[in-house]
Length: 88
Image (tube, rainbow, N blue to C red; front, side, top):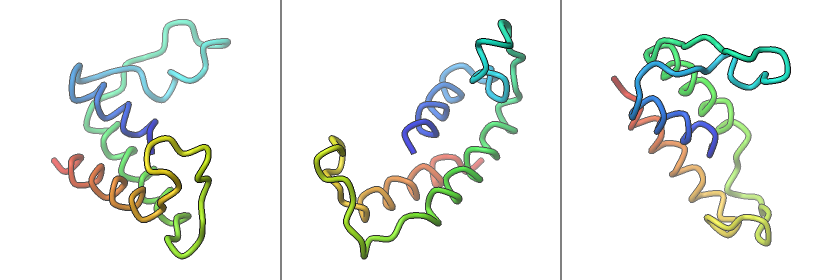
């Protein structure tokens, strides 16, 4: 979710940014810039995929989660807010 949020802020701020090739610095030195609309569409897919793995009925990593202290319900709300913010 945080990676999606980070890309959302990048695209909101700068428009087209490196995305599909950005995570391969060892093989691609100058990644191509992706269209902002395409990035937003992929971010929605990624959020939906992550949401399908979250279940507020189970405990989470309380000691390692410095944002929501293991509250899965809060992560679900955060994920859905990313989707709302991404609507064009």
